[in-house]
Image 1 (cartoon, rainbow, N blue to C red):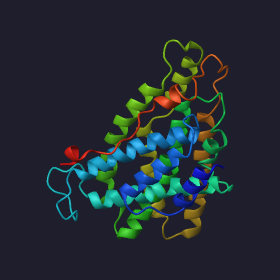
Image 2 (spheres, rainbow, N blue to C red):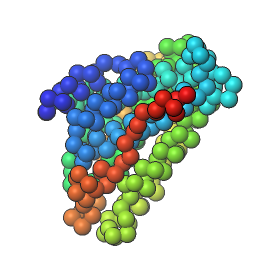
Image 3 (tube, rainbow, N blue to C red):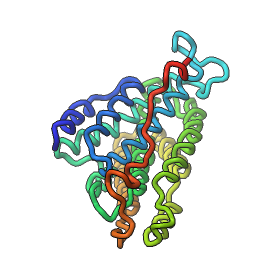
Image 4 (spheres, helix red, strand yellow):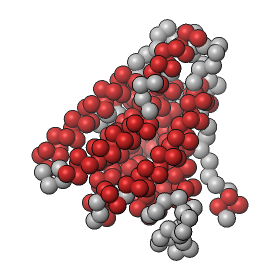
Length: 276
């Protein structure tokens, strides 16, 4: 591994506390990887989503940041900010494990194992990362949040579903940026078919069902562990399917530095004028 990737590994292993810290970690990981790397493709997507959520969190905080003001996007911004950090921590631990030569959770293994496969389109990497992070990491993060805050899932459900709007906006941009154009007919058909089998909205609804199941099992540790292990494995199997190489790929490949992998929009920090 390169020195920048080793540095990213060291910081990724630490659980983030704030959304800004998550943004910084994601930027550091992205800087350590080539644009065409499958993990880098997902990382740029995740950074874009995180900055969009951060901006929504900023809309509605009072001056002391202790509660949401009327008209804010989220009903409970502090809870959603904490969820964002807890949620990101699971991806960061997967990055740290891979960079240390260890196996990440089963749900993440397909992405890390196939990150350099020439027959996998960049959009497939983005979907596989979202699949692992939403369908496995998210329900565990929501349950962790509820246990930490002494609340039940019903108390965060409204804001949980509000994030769907943010994700839908980002996902539509990403699909437009990464989908092959009409000049790539050989791979456009299989890729379009693949896209029809997975959606972020369906994934998040499934994740919420997993939240409810895990919450009911919280007093049964053995059953909860078995459910979590089964979830990890099933999400990993779907990840393998999402990363099925779309051969022949020679006619569909982009140059790593200028093609689809590089077209994912860079996340940005809001300017002082935008934040005002």
